Image (cartoon, rainbow, N blue to C red; front, side, top):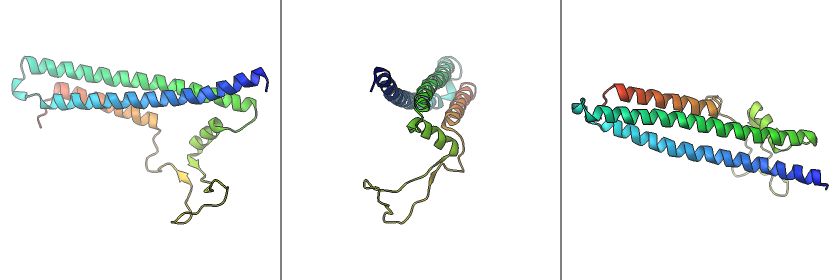
Length: 174
């Protein structure tokens, strides 16, 4: 293998490392921010409505602004990480196209668009594996929920902003 091929192979490997890094980073940050936002909502709901004037109103406003700010930061971080993950995916696909192979990057793209993965159901010896319950069907996305995950995240963030706006301007007591 020549130097160019070695460099391309290393670049190809790094594409998957990079994609994995940004995926893990996105979910870690999302989880932390959701915990913080949930705590802010719980605190805002518990602020005693009898103290509408003075500290609780300003505290409610401050917590609401922090919640909205964190929601928007979450969106920006998610979109940034998604972009770099797509850069890594497309770079890996370019390398596969250059070498005329249908590797994991191109197969992932095809399966994402087809919304189906054909399960080969073979064991390590390439023999048909049926299992205890018989044949399995192709693995497909749930047809009832046909929203891409990035749209689901955007909708969740939008809902969080609306919740914080409601909590700023409306009194809720549980």
